[in-house]
Image (cartoon, rainbow, N blue to C red; front, side, top):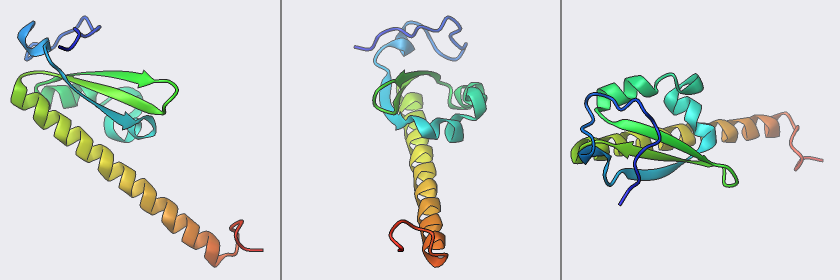
Length: 116
């Protein structure tokens, strides 16, 4: 059984206490949060409104991960979880491709530590 969120501003589309039970919980790399939620979480209210859910983020200090807790009706919270996980995976892959391109460019310029 999930715990109740710490927020005090429960959106009107979330029915308390029913939608606050058994939230969907998953973890995302903290470095991806800005790409998903915008600078300072500016997109969170929009994502909540469109998805008809309530989000709570908990940074897990030592692991480099952030726990995302999704509250709402069963189908809405599953859909929001899937959407957010998909966005996180897309951004992770884009960053990975960018690093591979950077490595290739460094090799071409003989700047990498592997080139002596």
